[in-house]
Image (cartoon, rainbow, N blue to C red; front, top):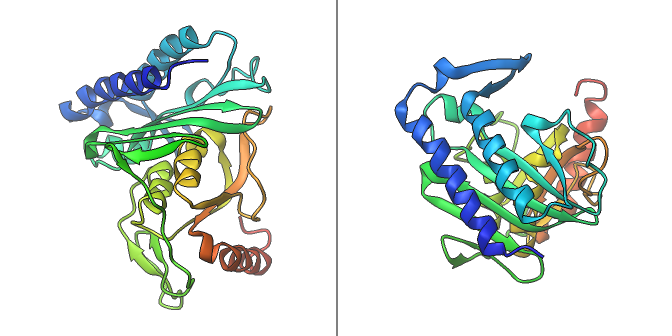
Length: 260
């Protein structure tokens, strides 16, 4: 098995690589749309290439599932795989905002066993080993203990008046939003759209080891490194409000059927 400290060191190096371009302030000049509304930067590609080169040396038998090499499915479905987002939160990255990170997970038999989020612009590095520990900058994490859905803290830019939740700062990176629940900075993160495994795999183990509940939008168990690389949404909450959140999401989906 690989040394977890080596994975963390590689994620740190990847963060240094991304930071050099972010600090140069020319991110928007080196960006294009890979599909409508989906942007990618030269830094995404460079970090992806760096991570694949370094991580495959660590564990040659593992598969590879990454946002920027998603078309390569030859190794998906293996018992072990790297699930990587070279820059999660590219929109913040290209705008010069700090809400982005490098996300690296090692998945075994469908579940993330190692996770690292390196958010160098925020000077934060989050790490977790399943069944062992989870921390940010060396501080042990304890997830939100919220027990009342009404008033729960949600990372969001704005909320309609009829929604009884409390808005808190929202980084563009969904991985960092899940990490906020792990560190009791938020109580609830929800997405009701089809999303990609690489966005959440590392944050999943970080949040779960801290005591948060992490499922798909229907409240079902998430499994990683299938052949499609997608899951229907994500729901990350304190243990005390997860059932209520699942019910609220189900009601929302029923009322908005066909609109998502």
